[in-house]
Length: 491
Image (cartoon, rainbow, N blue to C red; front, side, top):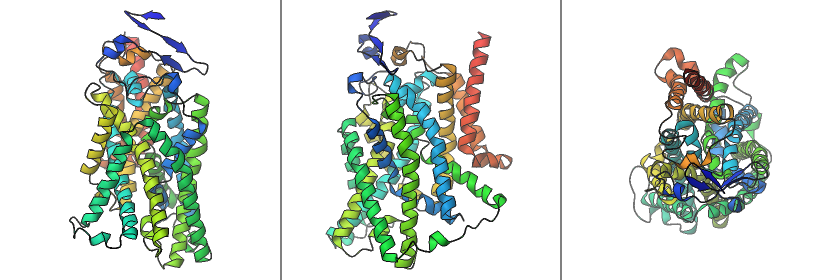
């Protein structure tokens, strides 16, 4: 036991450099503390290499990943160029993911608590809520896709299902809206069971979805007697000067796809047994799974051009054409499982913690998950999915600039300014070393966002918007380090 100011804290370094903080009456009494945000003790850090690999496999095996290549090919890329862009984007985003994963495993803390070191105990709500709002949008998108799959599943089991409850409204039948709400409720119910159930869902969902998609690939190639015309279609771009203006914003959008997780991976790595296990699990699974699953989407869609006379990129629509109720039911069950796995892991865990961070005494992890679900309805995901080009070049590309700016500040602060050393107990104290607002971090984030998004209002800066994530990341990171040095030299 050792005294820290006027409290007693037990702190020890674990063999791989992790830090464990035991119970402290003063920390528990702090308005910045609740049990969901507390450091995870060593005895509860039980996630292995497989758990992290399974996490990424289950998150990558989702409908938006399957359809990523379609948006790129629609812009004129060949299948090879599209898959290369996806692989490169996910390899690049893996770097900030791993850098921000480290403090989670070392200190056992979630993302919003980690952000307190750079932004201050109050200022951390700025990046946390920015990340949370993006997650709410993603939650809504995935919930709508899952609802469509559930609707198709119920239609296979109950032929009269589509018209069972009337015509509905907003261009969708009543049973479509009901399927959406049923899927939405299933997500919230799992979150209310806690992180242990989330881990179990990810573990068995990953191999199940992979096997079922492989079966669909086999069916497509066998039925079409080949891979189809999409794989033989030449690229629209003949020269690098033609390809580059499309490649750059597309690459930035691919990075934006997982820019959310590049911030909040501490929400998961806080449960890691060691730095080595969480790193290997993520390195092995993320770039490979995203590329392989997108490639599966290309192969299946290319075959459908022969089988049905048109390319069908949406697997829900594709399976809906099957006549066998058993095949449709099993396929849609696969989509439902895949969508639940990615939605909970990628889009609920982080905002639930983020909302809890804003009001620790009022909002628990479960309540934060419910808030996420409600906001996911408010953003009207059916409108976001109505335009594929808007999905990639407005939604993914747009928010990547803001999240890149936050990632730049967090990484610069932890790795360059603080050299990986945090005063763990002060992260939970209103009057500790990280109290209040860090104006420099807020200013650095604003600089990154202004440069990344400036092209939307200033035509001369439009090229910067195409590089939104990169511009935000490097501009905010450099500004944060510079402002820290100015502050220190001034004092």
